[in-house]
Length: 264
Image (cartoon, rainbow, N blue to C red; front, side, top):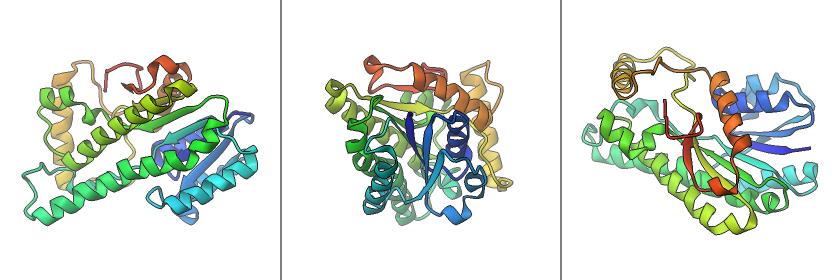
């Protein structure tokens, strides 16, 4: 019975990973959320092979406790870890690095993004690594973003959402560091972009809407085949195909839901 741990499982892409993977009753799926009481979609699945665990990815002690709970059910092993939890900070998404009126707010945004999107991923991997080492698959997937790609950034001229993009570029290198360390053990560490996915739960503010329109225009110039955002269901289906196909020779790669460098 393959086992999966998915962080940030309460909604959006994380929830969709849980939903699609748990459709196979042979899979044992653990969804990690900060607050199970508010994870209505996840708890409403009511599937016997889905287990909801509470932890914040920035809390290494809580993650260790979650790993201990997983070990009790799996017998001490884990096959797949999907690091989906992330901070996006929509409040400042429309700003460039020079667009913050207060430099202390800029620093807070940069540190906040790094704490969740880099430190949180490192804490999560370290907490579950002993279980993964006893698993038979050894795949660790970190959900990244195409906006962390330097070529896409320069080509499109997208300067906004800087703290988020910078943190995702940082976690890509963290993935590479783990890949370099554990390739000899047969591990596959992968940074995977889900594409541009519509995970919105509320109408955008005027500033967010304007920033989104500008981003879409830039993306269409970058890729003339781009038709707009895809749904979490579409994205996860494509990501799972990539996850299932990667091998040890791919460890450390940063690729998209297409399995290559096409980010849209």
